[in-house]
Length: 220
Image (tube, rainbow, N blue to C red; front, side):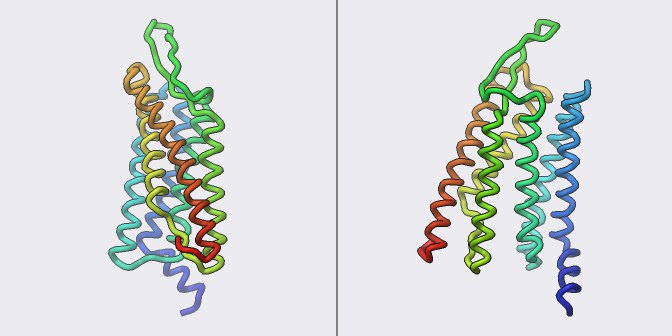
């Protein structure tokens, strides 16, 4: 079988099809956040965005499970799967900062026209820079390591980082959709946001240390 035909067959394997479906979910998710920030039905659109994000997270688990269980891991999957994860997470935080959530990263309260006290969780631009910059840097290090035939996959710190980031995104969406009048949930969401940024920074530092050892032919 030619390389072109083999690549086409790999692309049509179920885990890879699930990954490509997740790309569509990611762009739908971004569109729903835009609708939430630019229409009067923001609660509904934030809930739809939350459902879409959870579905994307479920398909992330599903394609990995299918690839391992049925031995259908491919070069495309190894590249595309983490790329879509980064696209989804980085895109979410960029849009949060771009729209009305931007500002200083602390909890603030306002009173609406009806006299109801509401609380807002801000995503600062520097937080987005930390999150996106970390992903660019680690992707570059991983690509360089693999170009030298050195395995440099994700570790437990990176997986924990993804969990904190996903939890923060879900909490922000739910907060914006229905619970921005609840100070306890707003405080919890703010804490999750800071944990996500802190874990992103910490895991990035640990990855750099690990890369230094691996690339100098030391133990990982």
